[in-house]
Length: 67
Image 1 (cartoon, rainbow, N blue to C red):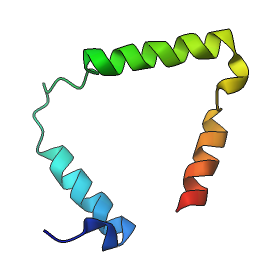
Image 2 (tube, helix red, strand yellow; image 1 turned 45 degrees about the horizontal axis):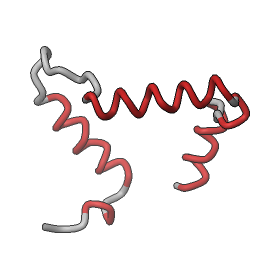
Image 3 (tube, one colour; image 1 turned 60 degrees about the vertical axis):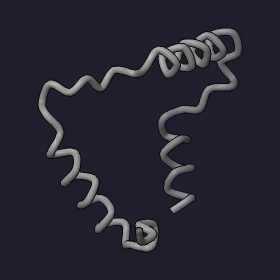
Image 4 (cartoon, helix red, strand yellow; image 1 turned 90 degrees about the vertical axis):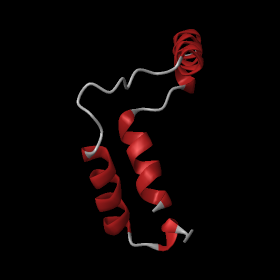
């Protein structure tokens, strides 16, 4: 199998979209029990100490910086 990370981002996104489009409309995209527990844990942590949360803008800035 080739390393898909070597493809340009646009090509990888087209692959992701092509795969996504093959999923049935009624596919369950709900988080697993483990994932939901982690979401709940993180939300509770943020409520206790909001300074640990990262804003959407900050998150997007970090993502862009990693590109």
